[in-house]
Length: 286
Image 1 (cartoon, one colour):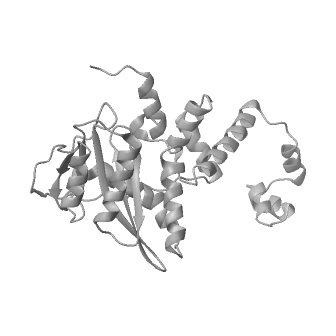
Image 2: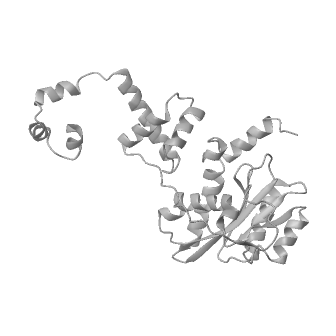
Image 3: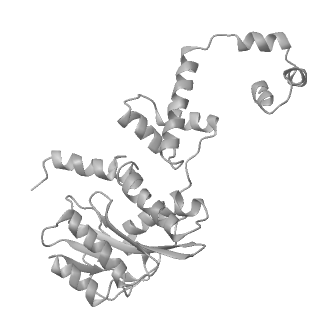
């Protein structure tokens, strides 16, 4: 307490008087050697702070615990990580607010039926569009996510949300993955996704188009989860001046942070790329 008051600019003598502590006793306590437990906690707090900074200030105690144990091989409980973070004033970003369930009406065949779990890459891709304002106007981003690893495999950014936007994201995904026939591309009923050009691009790659219910975000919940993370961890954290500034930030978030660094709780706190590399080494069930 006295140390905190001193950091705030209050003289030590005044703090000791108010708290009823002798000045000699305070300095005797300060000169006391730290215990091994206290030293380890200081060391852990330093590591936690470094991980939190590297996560761009987004990680809470669960992901920091995963980084310590899985990447750094540090043996520590998640509860101690939580306690040390609280004591040091280190906090992750709050998660998105829960959305009330809506009951949509299916207008075409849904090949997914909210079952997003897949055992191999390229079995199911989900895609959607988000938007965010800048002082110059809105930026629109379309993305394609592989449900197996939650990796963003294709994306496109523009000042207009038209069919070209979603086709460019799909083309990038096809070039990056070169999928075999039979995979599913799942989207909502936006006019960009229900257009003839987008459907033809899917079928030309040997894939199958798929749509969920109208007005029900849960039918594309995996993609909505990604947008919520990007909103919380990037888009809503500052005011963006230009479209170019925001476009560069989205590129950096997707390609550098999300795909390669951000640990996913649904993947056992591995990153999307780590999950794919591990699957290549693990025999898949027939």
